[in-house]
Image (cartoon, rainbow, N blue to C red; front, side, top):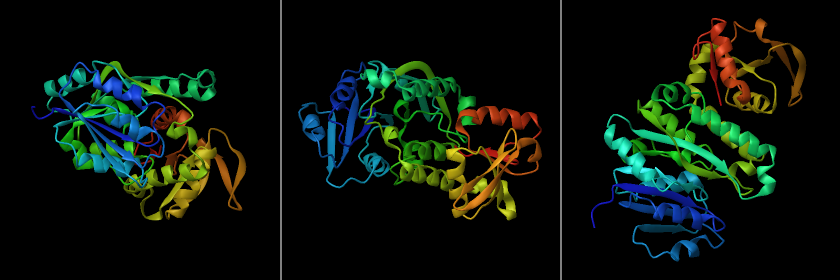
Length: 339
């Protein structure tokens, strides 16, 4: 058998409910020269038994008894890859039958591109989820992420926010290994893409839906409690710390645009990291908010244009970039998006 051209990379943890559909979508690809590397992160359900029930030589299953998180597992999986290209597969999502063929062809035809993403769409087999506000919000997120669909747009937006959906990428193995996955349970996807961008890797998009992402109550983002959010955004601050230090200068003084839950969490995390957060910013002045027994002012934007601003208001992040730019501020010098 020839050396496989593609490594389909998947980690699993208690994925028994949906993993069979995912595996079938991989094994029925029109492009069949691949190795399917699966690292199980200490599942306690039927996941491992289901995977072992397949008798396909392309499947290479590696099991660990201890659960160490997806970032650790993916970095371990990279050590097993022998193919020049990697395609990421999430254990509850569905790949279109022509996904591998189209994405590999794109990278072969465009040797200057290190990574290509595709469009994706959400689906759920739960009526309760389909009718939920969370589902509507996720579909809106998918539309926005899919709209970042050129090399120039990806290069512009990736330093700000996660505009590449993890489960949709195909990349050159050497580029993924060079950046690597962090030992993180959350934010491992953005860390990979952010570091690739910092290394000057070029990324593109195939403007076609090649992945269907399942939304269920078992999804990682469905169970983001306060502690997980703290870990997620704490790592984001660490990832962007250099840019925050350049922005704030010797004073390390910042102001946060937004005053909601994310902005308040960022206030705490930035303060703990050694930055001096003087106030929140909204379009109009509001009542001060209390954080850890401290009253923090909420000032109007017009009064804060001389401050160094961190945008921590996800629904309006791009509108704020546009507004601040139109007001004469320069991104990365005067303001930046944190998430």
